[in-house]
Length: 292
Image (cartoon, rainbow, N blue to C red; front, side):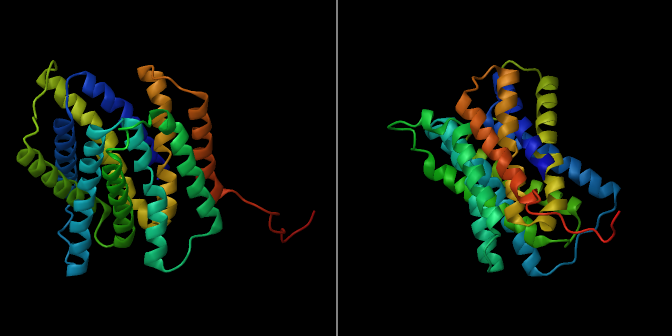
């Protein structure tokens, strides 16, 4: 799951570069899902992955997963259109506490105290790392409801992925989620009338951008998430993927020249502490069975 977070963190700066090259939101979103669906579909065909014979509960989870997966993209884009990007990006990280809350409700037990502290550290770190306070103003919270809905969709996707366990293969689940979310995004794009055109970039350059973005934003992360979510649980998995923000902030500074404030560095430190906390060995080591 750390790799998932790192890949999503790399996706952010690459997406900014793609926008500078002339690509737009609709083209990138639909293109990423189309390429991921094609790649997963070919892999399923080559690997002779069969359509799973599962009950209606399984397929309901699968359809809900595809629906909320597309909701993350659509609600977050809507938020970015209404207010500053740092505000939307910060509120999206509410998916970390939301996932822990959903996990507690689903499993009917509170998460470990250490996990609760981790969630608090990651959430506080996100506020600092995205410069949330420096971006707020009279109209900056217009997109807040949409960003919170995106966070809820993200948390829902974590919990649905965890709940599927080992039912079907990770490859099939990756294919299904990519295909369904991509179709939903394509349908919304057609209804709203968003252009799928590109300005200033050749067809070959556009395909290269979409392939790279799909690899780091969909192919590798989604497949790894399908393999790992049920092993770690939604709460811990969401904490680990929060590595996305430190990677995104750091690479934006290195690749794009974005300013990096001391407060942002402090936020990155809090996020890394929150990621590490559940895995630290606290207290004395267990006694050895032999003595020297």
